[in-house]
Amino acid sequence: MAAKRPLDLPQAARILEPGPLALVTSLHRGQHNIMTASWLMPLGFGPPRLGVAIHPSRLTHELITQSETFGLSIPTLDLLNAVHRCGLESGREVDKFLTAKLTPVDAVEIDAPLVGECVAHIECGLVQRLRLADHDLFVAEVLAVSAVEDLFADRWRLEGDGALIHHIAGDHYAGLGKAYRARLTEEE
Ligand SMILES: Cc1cc2nc3c(=O)[nH]c(=O)nc-3n(C[C@H](O)[C@H](O)[C@H](O)COP(=O)(O)O)c2cc1C
Image 1 (tube, rainbow, N blue to C red):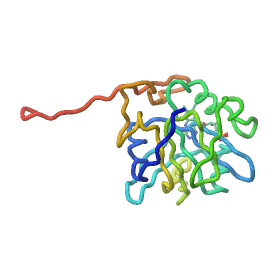
Image 2 (cartoon, protein in one colour):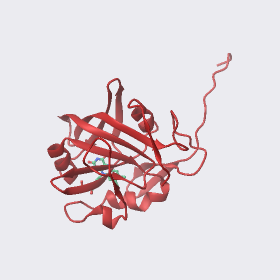
Image 3 (cartoon, rainbow, N blue to C red):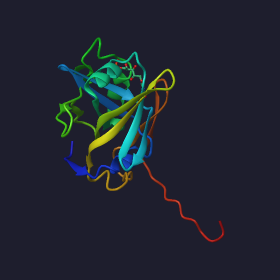
């Protein structure tokens, strides 16, 4: 994986702007975990905040509630099978870094590892956990952001390799690999 460049914290919103799914990493008392999540969103630039909806049954829910920190790692299509596996297996039964063959790498601001094969990372500190429906909304402040320079500079540069992954349903996914630019003219 190419080196990642640290970015200003508000860039977290731009990383999540096209709605890619993410691998949520967590750690508490020596137990690390990865969970695939598609229900996540930016909540603000200043302070930079984001939200992830996590069901109370997930090990991830427990680890983040205890540690009050988590990581988001943004995968590309080459990691599709690993991403799917991390959304089916539970860290209660297996170590998903091993079963999905993903590499834990050190974060800057949090103890939880990040996923080395991913192209961008957002490190998060828990601000609030809201019980709104059957999933809880974990509201987090952004503590650190980094991304591969060739793929992300103020926005995703999607013309090359490395399409972002979007979830459709079940084992169906889509890749966002090309960007289009809107141009308004006088006639419109
Ligand atoms: C594509 C995909 C997206 C998912 N998104 C979410 C999500 O946003 N929130 C959630 O609670 N579970 C989501 N899941 C389900 C969890 O990833 C799954 O239950 C996982 O096994 C939980 O792992 P854990 O028990 O190790 O935390 C998703 C699963 C898939 C396959």
